[in-house]
Every structure is written in C-alpha cells, then in structure tokens.
Image 1 (cartoon, rainbow, N blue to C red):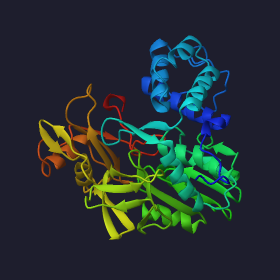
Image 2 (image 1 turned 135 degrees about the horizontal axis):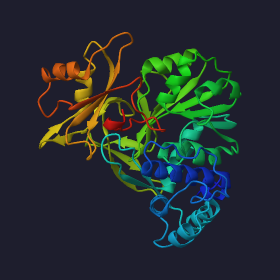
Image 3 (image 1 turned 180 degrees about the vertical axis):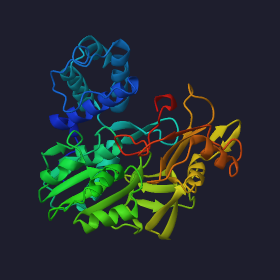
Length: 405
C-alpha cells in the first residue's frame, strides 16, 4: 500500500510546475524551428498569445502542439482544436491539465541527440516517483530549489517538478535568466541548486564561497573531477547523478573520482550492456545501457565510455569520440567535439575545436595532421574554432552549423 504520509504524484495539480514544464517544452520546440533566434525568456505569463506575442506561425504552432501531445500522451485530436484555434498559453495549460487528470501515468522525454538523432523515451510516472523517493533521502533539509535547467527534460523534471512535490517545496527559482554570476547573491542556507557541468564550470571560474548548508546537483554530462573538487573546496556539497533519458537515474556520488552507488532498485545482470530494475508494481524490467560500466563491486561503478556511438561515413563505421580524442592529442588543441555533418552540410565528420590559450593552428594544418593519424572516413572534412564547446541548455553537447561560424 502507498504511504499515506507522502504526497501523491499528481504533479500537474501544481499550477506553477505545470506552467514551467509546458513553457519550457514549447520554448524548446520553437527554438528548434527557429535556429539562431532565442525564444522568449521565461517565465511565460498565462495570458501569452503564441501567435500574437511570440509570432508563431501555423507550422510552428503545429510543431509545438505535437510536441506537447507526445510528451503528455494526449489523445489524438484532444490538443489540436483548443491549441491551434486559441493559441494562448492558458488554453494549452488547461488542455494539458485535463489530459493529465484523465491519464497522467506516462511521460515521453526526448534525448538531446548528442550522439545521433533525438529519440523519444517513455517512462511511467510511477518509476520516476520511485526514483524521487530515493533521491529525496539524499537531500534532507532542502527548503528552496534554484534551477539552471529546463524542466521538460527528464533531469529537470525529476529535480524541479517531482522533487519539490516530494519535499513540500513551493519555491522554485529559475536561474537561467540570472546566470552564474548572480548565484552568490541569491543563495540561502537550505538551497538546492540544480545545474549541469557547463553551468557549474562557469560558477567555479568566479571563485565562489558558498554559504553553509547549500547543496548542488549535476547531471546530463560527466562532471570533471577537478571541477567537483573546486566546488567542494568552496563549500558546496555536490550530488552527481549518473543516468540517461533512456534509463532515468542509475547511480549517485558526492565526491569527484569516487565510484557511483547504484540506486537501490537497480541490479547487475548477466549482460554487461543491461541493468535490471525492480519496478514499483513488483515486476522487473531490463534496460539497455548507453555506457560501459566498470564495477568495483555489485553496487558501485564508474562509467567507462560509450557502448556504441558509431556513425557511418562512406559505408564504414567510425567513432566520433575516438576522432575527438585524436584531435585532443594535437599540441594546440585543448578540447574537441566531433559529429556527423547535418544533411545540408555533407556526409562526412565535422569538428569543433577549442585551442589552448596562447596557441594557434589553422583548419588546414589540423586536417593535414589528422590525415597522418586517421583513416579517410574518420577524417573531419570541416573544422570550426571557438572559445567553448557547443552545449545545449541542459549542458549536453550541441550541434553547430558550419556556415554559421
């Protein structure tokens, strides 16, 4: 039987949580349709008219309504009439709430596409609620949540929608408009700061001194051990959560370099590429992993690289991560990101390179250097230089347009 002392999982009954989720999802979908044009910054008022105030045309409205229907499993046709004919945020929120009250048992999140095309990942609300019960025990005494991540991705949903409901927190502050520099003046004892490694890197460069009893959480991408150590030295307890859109959270740790502890409902299987999860209804399901895991024992592990992040170039499987590692061996290269070109750019690999401070090289020289170390399909056909690797709002690697650089 459910514990009657705990809040139920009907997150949509919190109007502010539903508004954050819907607005973040719609803003992200609109941004996809308008590359290079930033969407209207949050918060979005209920009276916002997506056509009049945001300038969304009929195709953009259709894309946003489809994204909302997919995420919330709205019945076919239940969204189109109220959403497309009266595109005010208040109408979209009402339609979303009505659908969730009828059946809010599943949500679909999309992967970032950092290792290929984005794909839908559907989760039962009961399994997400199971995770939050466990994570909440790791975060006692939290009184306020400050978030630098969007709430429609699975990480943001868990920590800025479900966790506040589980802990009875009504104050969720959006940090995205304020930025890392404003954090120090906003912090109070009892705060939980939800962010990603790229955001935490920006905070660390400002040499912060955290007040007592402030906790941070990071996910979506690996947190470098040196960054975790810097934040710890500044007084922050940092909870690192390992997982993916496909699995949700799998493990956690609070020290840089320490192994991750499996969340208690996960267990190893006889297949190194899978984990077993004990579900809330008593059954067990297997989930495919995105990474190889190096195990210390049955319950502790370290990620050990992607299982298969190959793409095809000229009919040959190549591994962009390996090519990026080779690029990083160049004496002038500090960091590199490699991915397959967009269809309008070509059919080869492209590279985004961050040079070491005070050093330089040219795209031509770098490509010549690659030609001596990589096979023809592995060699990037275009190189873009920049000060930082492209990142999404969630902190995961982002695509870049060659012609735009």
